[in-house]
Image 1 (cartoon, rainbow, N blue to C red):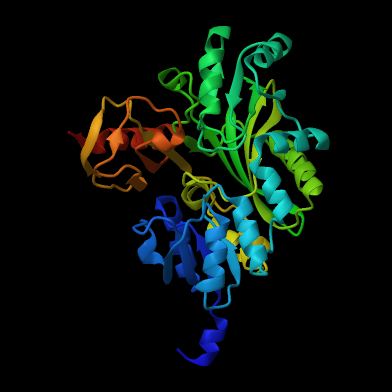
Image 2 (tube, rainbow, N blue to C red):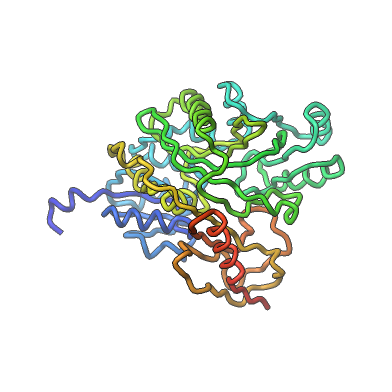
Length: 413
């Protein structure tokens, strides 16, 4: 490689190389970037896609800092993670390297705390469900008397629905309370009023202070009874049936309150929202790329927007043209999951991926041979695999995904 070419090649530090990160690693390679990739798993599925791979835990900043001080031997132009819930570590790492062009440390840290982020939204005037931080069961009973059932109970510092329960009777409080505390490092947990209505995942870019809403997926909770009392999403569908222009405008206004309060000019922001009595409420927001293939696969397939390329450019401090944000299509995309409830129990002997067809975009197992299948899905990390499909309508896209899920083979001992 000639010197002029070397100068043009930028280095991207990528935190994470698991299944969900593979599309991002592929995109970085397509963009001609040199990737230095960290993951705590020495056999991470995306390892082969890295120009450099190093076994470093991305959940522990001290390990990343040690890598920077003792191993990293080249200048880094940007830091990113694809669908990993570590915005504070991303921000700290980028700041440590002098390449933080998106979320500042303080904003990233606040976004990771479910309680502090709700307090912040309340202060900014954002529409949110009623909530309270509690440490005793009696406080939950008092909250219910004030706001009525049902409610949601959750840890303030976990993700993937770990420790989250739906409470519809006083008899459930003790067990749900204990499970939430088993999934937190805090001495308090969060409760909030459950608002019945369509839930939508959103993902937006903030570029030079302007909000660009790109992705909307209707979350599929059609099997809630199957997983009760846990709140388990069985995929979702794009485009959204519920996000009218009025609600999109409302979302922009709500997100504007958030980014103004945090002083954000360039970033990715994802939202979990609910539409209750024709009004939009934000349940949670996160200052990162979403996981579960939403940002990496579903949004690009639905909208035609090269979502990952734009995100990478943001983290490299590169300019983004308005044309790159233009939604050029509106295709029907569905994702569905394989669950332990599918009459499976025991140690996995083998996994069989069915043949793909023109309607299947991506399919994979999260589980591996040797894993023990439990009898109950308690959080999203328990999902065994997924299928992303397309179709001429929502019904056909969903049908293709559900049929392919049935064809995914799991043999157990």
